[in-house]
Length: 137
Image 1 (cartoon, one colour):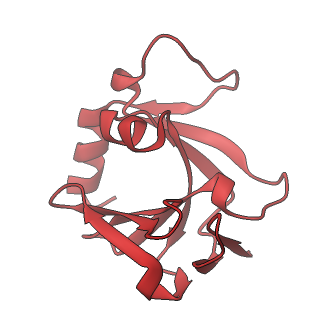
Image 2 (cartoon, helix red, strand yellow; image 1 turned 180 degrees about the vertical axis):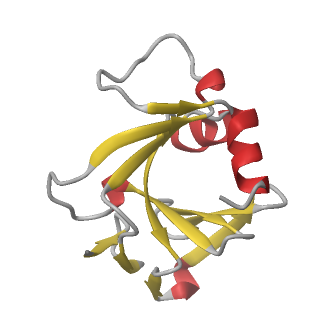
């Protein structure tokens, strides 16, 4: 399934192919600091095509990941997992229908108590997430 989106000012447009229709919530402290709340993201694997890369800034937030944003309006564009060459895009950035479903939450051990999602999901702690990626799954 293909999709597209753009930043608030329209300087950066993205064309993607979704790896699935599953949506994830990341509760890690970096995502919450970056976005002001949990990051609700869709896996786009390595299919992201960025039009006008000159308006994109990539911030290396860890040894294994970059976070991208528009240099003009500040819109959050992606979380890029370097070892897997994998893009995760905020679902709100993309023009979508209602076919996506929140299926899993990561860094659940860092989620503050002041919010919850109502549907049942597969939940992983930070340690479980790192073990998953080290195992190459």
